[in-house]
Length: 135
Image (cartoon, rainbow, N blue to C red; front, side, top):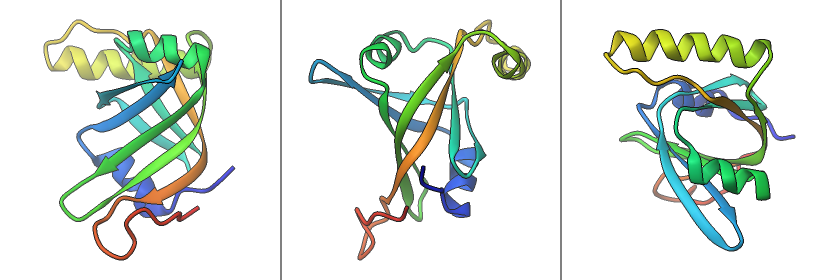
C-alpha cells in the first residue's frame, strides 16, 4: 500500500468532482464522481449511486484510477477496489449520501461503496512534476 500525501487527501475531499476510471476486456470507462472521500492516507471511498458500467468493470477487474484536480494542480490515485453493499461502513455512507442528496432535492441512494486501496499516487500538476510518482 502507498500513502497519499496530505495535499492529495485534501483535494480528494474538497474537489467538486473526480474522474473515476475502470477497465475490463481492454475497454476503458471513465465517469465523474462527486461522492468521494479520503478515509485515511491509504483508502479512498467512492459512493455508487449509478456506476453501472464501472461496477461491471470492477467485477471483472478491480484495478482503478481516480484523478482529482483544481486550478493549481492535482493527483492521480491508482489502486484496487473492494466493493461493499452491506455492513456498517456501507450503512454509514448510504445515510450520509441520502442526507446530502435529499437536501439538494435529489432522490438517489447509495447502492454500494467502492473502497480504493491506494497502491500508487502520481502528480498531474503541469510542469516538472507532471506524471511523477509520489507514492
